[in-house]
Every structure is written in structure tokens, then in C-alpha cells.
Amino acid sequence: MVELLPLSDIEPQAIEELLDAAFGTDRFGRTAYRIREGMDAVAALSFAAVEDSALVGTIQCWPVAHLAANGIATPLVMVGPVAVRPDLQRGGHGRTLMAHMLDAAETRADSALMMIGDPEYYGRFFGFDAGATGAWDLPGPYEKRRLLARVVNGHGLPVTAGMIGPR
Ligand SMILES: CC(C)(COP(=O)(O)OP(=O)(O)OC[C@H]1O[C@@H](n2cnc3c(N)ncnc32)[C@H](O)[C@@H]1OP(=O)(O)O)[C@@H](O)C(=O)NCCC(=O)NCCS
Image 1 (cartoon, rainbow, N blue to C red):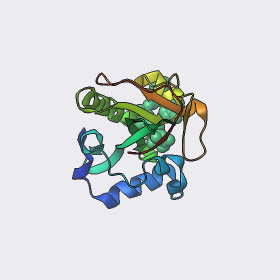
Image 2: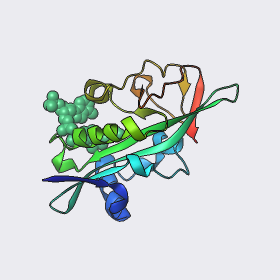
Image 3: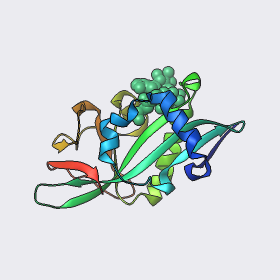
Image 4: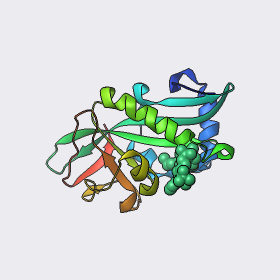
């Protein structure tokens, strides 16, 4: 049986090993890491999936912001990485973790959600799309179609040009 726990209950080393297995040890160069550089994860929106005492998946969320040219900053929560142990992928853990985070976000997120991810997965199951993000910019390479966002807990999305970075 899978248990969903606050990510803070899990040994940091076990989380890093899972992320290395899911994304590779070169993951730190990714644009997503630059967006949230120096930030601590949002504890209320970061979870672990544990099965028979073993860590099988994680989801982390980060406080970031959209900074417009006029200096106005709009807070956002960046979702990800979502990671499932490679030998257990496509078994529903990713969907369980995302659904659990979204449930929590419906009442606890302090801003709308954004992420870099496949619309074929995060659009199909979780309501993310690239509709608001066309004029956004990121501090590194990315595919525009994979820059996704979603309103939550009454928080809307900025649609103007702006750079996404740490809050
Ligand atoms: C992406 C990931 C989190 C999905 O979790 P999962 O537990 O493997 O997948 P689930 O069982 O929840 O979902 C399975 C369904 O999603 C689909 N799916 C999974 N990953 C997908 C992707 N990247 N693009 C499109 N569809 C995808 C599967 O085809 C399956 O659809 P089906 O039910 O119609 O067959 C997981 O595979 C993973 O850790 N991948 C490596 C790291 C990664 O790329 N993370 C996402 C970026 S933050």
C-alpha cells in the first residue's frame, strides 16, 4: 500500500538518490533549477510516496515569481520535479502524487502554479496548459510548449511578458 507523507519526513539523501535515478546526475544544469535557485521547497505542497518503507516517488514545489518589465512581481508556485522510481514508472504513482499536491494546493497554495513539463501528461490529467505563458521568459533554455501553468485556490495567472525566477 502506498502512503503519502510530507517530504520533510524523508531522509534528504534518499530524495537525492531518487531524483538522480529519475533525471540523471546531470540534472542540476536544468533551467528549472535556475528558476528556483536559493529557494527552499514549499513544505505544505511537497510530498513523498512510500511503499513497504521504500521511497517510490516525490513531488516538490517552490516559491517563484513572474517579474514584469515594470517591476511588478507576481508570486507563483513552481511544481516539480515529479519523480517516480524508474522501475515503478507508469504504475500510477505520478498521478497519485500530483493529485495529492493539487488537493493541498486548492486550499493552501499562496499563488497560481507553473511548471516545465509534458503537456501530454500534465495537461491531459491535471489541467495545466501553455495558454498564459506565451510571453513569459525563463533563465535558460526551454521549449515554449512545455512551459505550463494553472490557476488554483482563486489565484490567477499573469499573461504579460516577464521573467520567471526565485521569489
Ligand atoms: C513523468 C512521471 C512523473 C509520471 O509518473 P508515472 O507514475 O510514471 O506515471 P503514471 O502512472 O502516473 O501515469 C501513467 C500515464 O501517464 C502517461 N505518461 C507518463 N509519462 C508521460 C509523459 N512524459 N508524457 C505523456 N504521457 C505520459 C502514461 O502513458 C500513462 O498513460 P495511460 O494510463 O494512458 O497508459 C514519471 O514517469 C517520472 O518520474 N519520469 C521521469 C522524470 C520526469 O520526466 N518527471 C516529469 C518532469 S517534472
